[in-house]
Amino acid sequence: MLGIDYPIVLAGMGSRGKATPPALVAAVSEAGGLGVLGGAGLPAGELRAAIRATRALTRKPIGVDLLLPATLAQAPPSRNAVRAELRSRFPEHVAFVHSLLAQHGLAEAQVEHDFVISTNARNGAKTPQEEQVDVIMEEDVQVFAAGLGDPSWVVPRARAKGMTVMGLAGTVGNAQRQIKAGVDIVIATGHEAGGHTGKIATLPLVPQVVDAVAPVPVLAGGGIGDGRAVAAALSLGALGAWVGTAFLVADECAIPAQSKAQIIDGSSAQFEVGRVFSGKTMRSYKNEIIKAWEKSGLDPLPMPYQKILMDDFNEAAARAGRWDLHSNPAGQIAGLLKACKPARRIFDELVDGAIASIRQLNRGIAA
Ligand SMILES: Cc1cc2nc3c(=O)[nH]c(=O)nc-3n(C[C@H](O)[C@H](O)[C@H](O)COP(=O)(O)O)c2cc1C
Image 1 (spheres, rainbow, N blue to C red):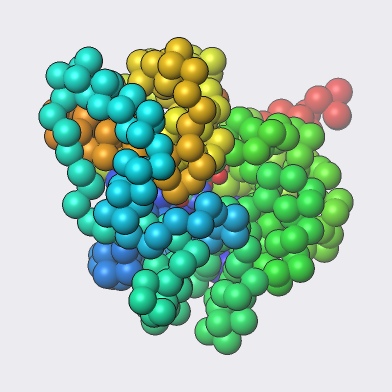
Image 2: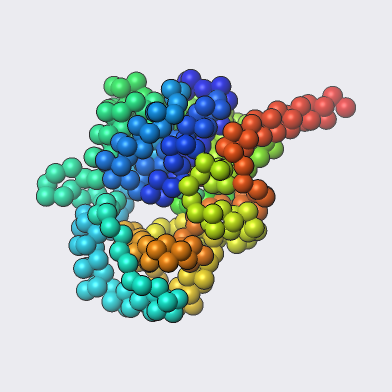
């Protein structure tokens, strides 16, 4: 269906291009899986450049993942306009972030680009997400993956172009909505996952989604970090694995070395779900900033307000090289990951480990 050798897919991870850069996407596709570029935070022009850079490294199938949030607080489609609203409507939150900057000796900073996930169009033109989708349709991309939201408006265009469409689901209800939207493959991702995540764990979620959407194929995601978990996903009825966090420690992944070290050194319990960095429930490394928000008693704002507020904080931390204070979305499986490796090795270990696990299970039955 996807033209790949092994049913292992690099999950699209959208952190301004750092988590799934062209080198990582291409490495997974070249290894015989499917590399998916996380396009969510990239303005249309940068998304096009990233797709072309990936294409320069591989002729194999590739995918692009976008977030198409259906439910967003009504916010203006520009960072500056959101910042102005933050100052007038949420002065307490803005003051708290200023106090965090002062406490850590960070100079105030702003994300320079004006891209923002919004359901509103700029001056009656296209929404930023419509512009991103246009790019995917114009470029040499075989798979479209829809994260948060409703991809129904993208499906007919993707079909017309011969693309495969996948949709993420964290509940059986989400999965049924994705089927209604017309996706070809459902990705069932559990609570363990890194990044935005739901409440149902992978083990109970996957078989329920498999039953609910049959005969539509399902990929399992959330907590898959070695071949044993790939074999488990297959035994739950999934046809393959959607793997995010385990590839964050690939040499080709461009997140900062300090963020990789938090994943390598951290235990599963240090990766908690919270709303501090985006306004939606997101699993990330629990750093001092998340702890300070919790202590403050302030409720994080809805997306995109909280995200735009904290993107500027992240920018200040990044400029100071304080990656320990920067957000670091990753999943519970971080506890299992002990070393950075080339993507090809991570991939081969997933495949070889799955085969070894299945063989061992078979031997158990024979005995
Ligand atoms: C750093 C990071 C960024 C992510 N960004 C996105 C995104 O932009 N779109 C999306 O659909 N999922 C995103 N996710 C979720 C992944 O696609 C995937 O579902 C998850 O990583 C799977 O669980 P695992 O991390 O346990 O492998 C992100 C995950 C991480 C860790």
